[in-house]
Length: 115
Image (cartoon, rainbow, N blue to C red; front, side, top):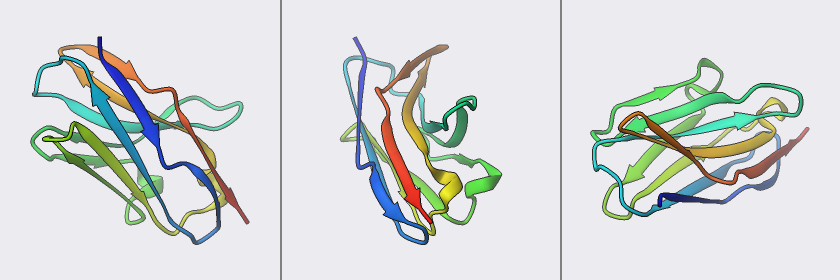
C-alpha cells in the first residue's frame, strides 16, 4: 500500500517562503511522476508542479519562477520550495504520485499566505 505524507505547510506573510516535503512509502515502480496539486476553497484541484523520476519538471504558469520542485529518489521524497508567496497561493497542497496509471494522494497540508 502506497502512502504519502506531507509536511511543511503553515502561515506566512506575502513575499515569504515555505518548503513542503512529501515522503512516500510502500512498494511502487521506480519510474513514476511525483507532484504537487493545490485546492483553494470553492475551486478545483489544480496541478502546481510535477517531476518525473528522471528529473523532468513541469510548472503551472502561475508559479513559474517562484516555485521549485525537486526530489530525492533514494529517500522517496519530493519537495516544493515556494518563494515570493502571494495571497492567491493560499490553498491546501496535496502531494501526488502517478505510477503505472495509478494515482495516489497525500492527506494535504494547508498553506496560508497573509497579505
